[in-house]
Image (cartoon, rainbow, N blue to C red; front, side, top):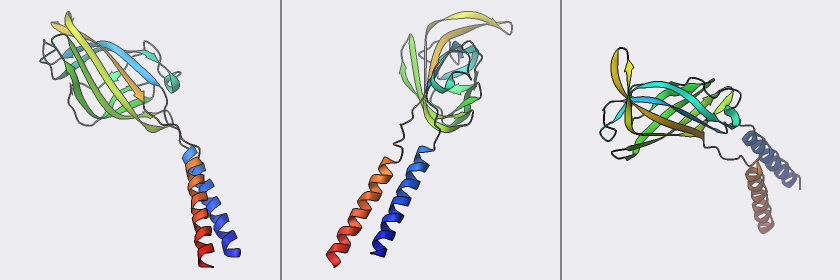
Length: 194
C-alpha cells in the first residue's frame, strides 16, 4: 500500500511540475507590417532575384505584443542586400526592441507585375521567448524613378508582414492526463500480479 501511495504522489508531483513548466513560457503574440521602397537587383520585377537596398521602410501596422514597442510610422532596419531565396540571416528586420532571425525564404510568385516572397524564422526581443514566425513580402511593378545619391534609381513599392505563429499552451493538461494514465497502468499491472 505504501508503494502505491508513493507512486501516486510521485506521479501527481511530476504531472503538476511538468504542467507548471509548460505554462511558464512567454511567447510573442501578434503581427507587424511594414511598407516602403525597395531597389531590386534588376529594373524588371520578373528578373529580380533580390533587394539591393531598402528605401524608407516603416511600420505600417501592428497588434498584440508589438503594441507599445513598435510605433506606426517608425523606421525599420532591414538587411540588404538580400536574396529572395536566402538561407539564414540573423536580425533580418529589427524595430522597437524586436528582431526577426530569418531561417529561409523562397520566391512564391513572380510575374511581369507582381512578386511575393515568403520566409520563416524566429521573432525575439523585449523579454519574450524566441517565437516561430513568418515573413512575407510583396512588391509590384511599375517602379518609380527616384534620385538616390545623385543617381536616378528605380524604386519598387513593397509591403511586408511578420507574424508570430505560436500555439496556445495547454496549461499542463496533457502532462496531468499522462500522469493519470501512467498511474492507471501501474495499478492495473499491480492488480494482475496479485
